[in-house]
Image 1 (spheres, helix red, strand yellow):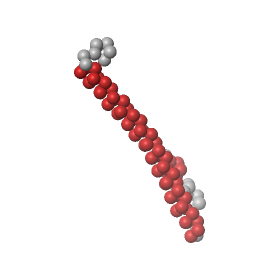
Image 2: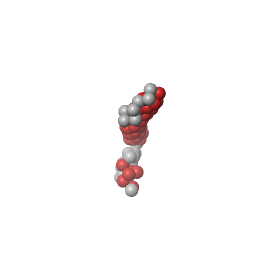
Image 3: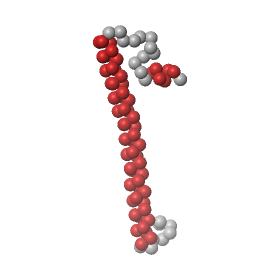
Image 4: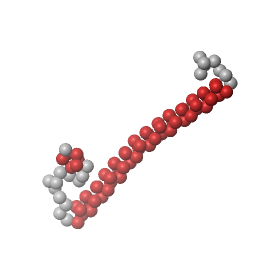
Length: 79
């Protein structure tokens, strides 16, 4: 399970920043990694929400059609 925690960080700990330039690079790298991970999770969430909206719209339309069929006394085979 350690590889999961280490895989999402800068590294395995074998190398650590020694000077200021390496520390800045590490901070920028972690920030970019965080932004990319957030973007991917956001994109997946958007796909799920859009799919749920389509299902909601479909159910709403189906409910309207059912009410219309009941109002106009359609045959039960057509409902």
